[in-house]
Length: 125
Image 1: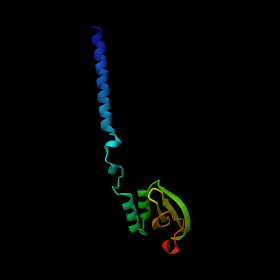
Image 2: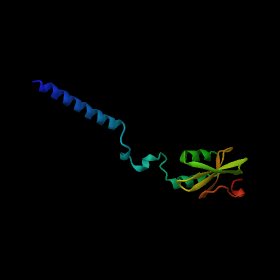
Image 3: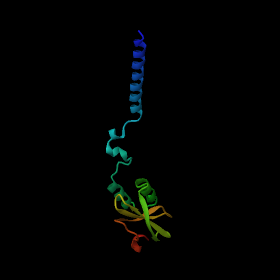
Image 4: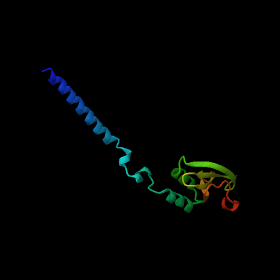
């Protein structure tokens, strides 16, 4: 009868491990189970984001939209006179788009496809 307590202990441990694993998966589901569109909270494609920023170009607060959409993906590649003093040209390598941003008014003043280190003066006024 010494075999019964060992068997009972083994079954109890196996049961706890399986229940623990199931409850852990319920709390933290695998990312692969989520649809690809759920990874982006906005639900917009990169091109839709660029189009929205272009449409709202020059509108106060548009810079916040730029930061939210492309957080961590913008590389400063140039600074030039324009806006209310100077503008910074920010390049998004993933989408090959350059945004000209005026921090004084928090607005995007120009958007162009490709890596543009200096926009024409009439575009960043």
